[in-house]
Length: 415
Image 1: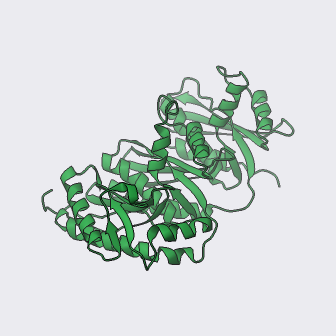
Image 2: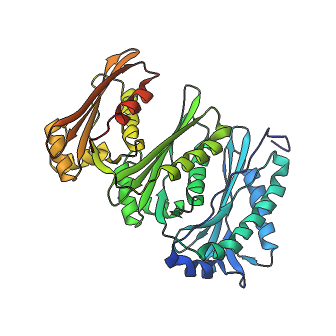
Image 3: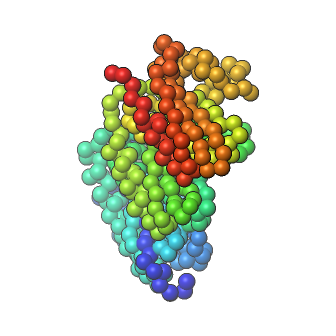
């Protein structure tokens, strides 16, 4: 890059911090308040899709700028430091991203952070200086934020699964989600380092990708109220971001949101819009509990069936009418009861539904070939054991996600 323009670059940073009332006093002491110096350590910024040399330049300039302020004491040795500043530099297509935030060492909570734009590499040092100044301002404002504390939900955000996107976008998407969720003021976000420590514990990591069940296990170990999982996938010329908010105690997905954009450069706006929709749609009203059975799709390509199943579950989530227990939870109970290895029939589904204390159990299915597919959904009342809703739809492969969502959304339980 060496001083050449990056064509409409942007620096993207998380995270603005919010804490619970019980931790306000500790936070004020940790950060030092207006009358005491902030004692911290600045770690080397990580590089994702950019050269390590660029990250080194950012780290050096950021650390120098922070050290020159009379309200900050930057230390090299971590033993006496209560806070640590982390940062990263990542590439989103033709944009550059910088991410920086300060973390409470003892609790692992994100306290505060910042973001600002950068149009070309030759502006990196100047932006790093401004970034440090803005982070310091956020630290000074932290006590004011705590003067009117409100109840916030503890949230652990896992790295999103990614497919066909660049390394910079793969890293940046999770960083942006984490930042945006914290900036809503509704969540006390646990830093990623705390989760990584638990994942390294002997015997915890299972083979293969992280499942929702193992993520819930980690959430319980960390005593958080919610976890968030999701994915970022490039398919047919569009990038789709999907995020799921899961209640750890209940093991249910309380909300799922998706957003699309044509280019990696537009991921920030897409993610911010997705989080805004989360906040808008997150109602306190009591939702009807529903369990989702395993999706039946004999002879259908696994990836296609998984896409349809995910979209159908998403349709139930997004209707706002149901507290949805995903199929993975039902399968776990089937394993405990010795039913593993065979598909659950509807009778078993209703029995498991009673064990989960839900009102409804739903099952989706799919059949067809080439470019003509038939989707079906059936909903059973757990109390009566009767089918209360059944509907099918025929669609092309391109129409599959929308058709699956529409089928699920069309179920409206009787008042």
